[in-house]
Image (cartoon, rainbow, N blue to C red; front, side, top):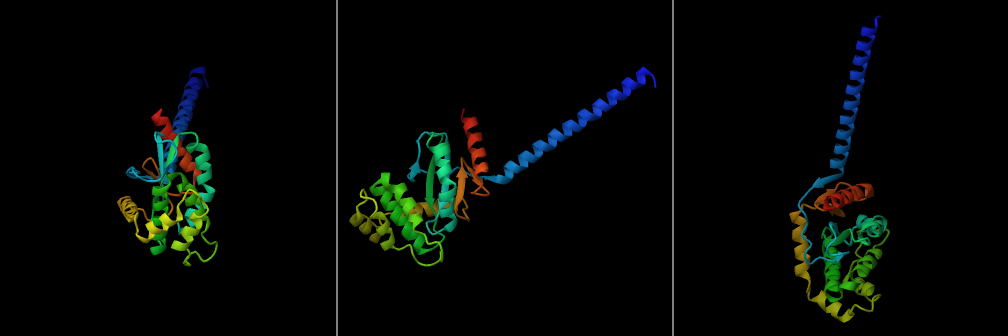
Length: 227
């Protein structure tokens, strides 16, 4: 084979190699894009006006949890994901976190929501501690059993000196914060929330709320865009 043909074959091999490499890169991009789109669904940003919110008010990223004090998965999320999220992003000023009540478990969900909203109105600084303590009272067995009663919420509130138990009791009896609970119910309907917890990061709803890597990816992407 002469030198000219050898060069021609080498050129053809190089062209094939480059073509295969380009196809591989394109395939990788498609896979990564599909993985990202599969981890979250685009939805409208949630209006958190008046909602209990943790973190800096001007944080560039907003995360919303739609949760229910009767929901075992919400309790698990609060123990497994929430602390890491707070440490990594809320405490650094990058994320503000809001909680919206969901009423999927009937009257007990309403009782818990009324109590939490009453605590928030009375003493916002005590809200998150009360929130965590109320979830902690959720039984490990027989989740459907009736445990979330007005008496239980008052028992939990008694752990916090800043909460006036008499005012809380009166507010719950008169359902003083029912307008807040109804506002949350409207947001649940507006955003088609069908499971708890539902986690929304800057308008992106997570398919799997326990996938912390997916949560981090959405946060980091939003932070990059903000900068």
